[in-house]
Image (cartoon, rainbow, N blue to C red; front, side, top):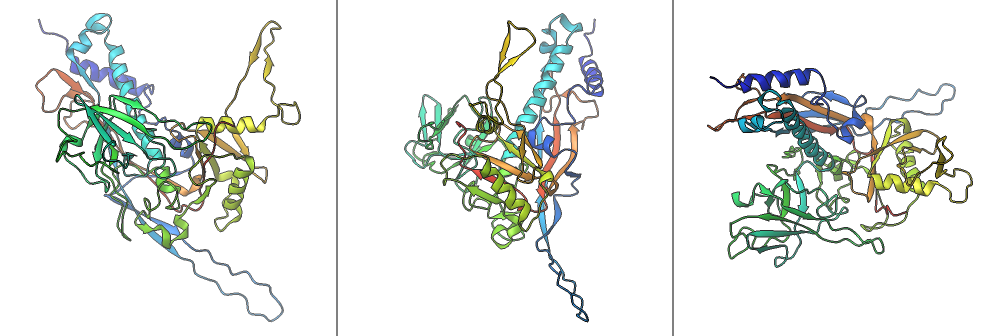
Length: 474
């Protein structure tokens, strides 16, 4: 007697699930994308690169007039062409016949395990894009400590890698973006490949270095992986690893090093690659943007406020107000209503804490809240601030993104952004449905590969700002 036709069953089931709109495959649960949704322009890519137009100057022609005076002449303004590279990413999910047969309830109730496989794929896809949304497009995750003797060590095939990057010189401290189970590549200090033995390394543990709340000095962090290859012995690929870079698996991007050359980015360009002046997040790391030199075009430099040269320090609401005023009254003349603040939840709580009064005066926050039951009182601790009031009284939304380190915040001008998407869905090259027999395998395994093209561009960077060196323990 023939067994169940699992291929047809799981494909029909998955199609019904997706039609019901309950799996979230069309929308990403990524704070940056949700922030821009409905406001940013969404276009499709055509070809490997897309060209954007950026206005770099504005005309000033207004003059005082008197009788018989010639009217002022018009004045031209300049535009700049920039190039944006298309990037794609993939996720996959697998199910074996045994997975389905072991499902609760037997072969007739395997829906739960299919749903779980799809949900885990969604979670993985969103995790990848959250990392991309804070990155610079290269896929870099960390920088190995500048010490050949201790940067990478080994004990019985277990390698420990020390990362010393900071939020000021890289975008985040040490292992901030690493998680157990992730796969990473290690490349040299220039981002060039070392060899196959340094690719696809699965992280087995992560030790996040956390700054002391007293001195707030930078500290190192570490992660481990296992390998039977002698990587640190004489002639090993990691014998002298000082300054080597850790990348997201499969990524090998580089920022352009010459004018009119498209970045060889392999991951979507994120906020640390856009909202920078080529000093913060690593001096010289972002000298070019979308094929143009930042030094030559002020419009490509975001407004940067560094409060303490890379060490968190005290700040208050006036710090934010000053940055907003610079955006709204400077050459960009952005509207406060077009701005949004993005920051870590700890920074949002710090804003709330600084805004309440412990004396019960104006603006005091009621900590003990009656619930209608005299015998029961709800106690509220620190909460996220949700809105910041600009100097002119305009409310500016505060969006929480815990991928952003708790030492800086972004102020984004939403109309400046363009989200490019193309082919956003499952790879069905066999024509057999979403779930297909695993490629190049004779095992009884089905896979459901998913692929998307995505890139984030801006028509100018100087409408955005970053405020850095923020303490969150306020």
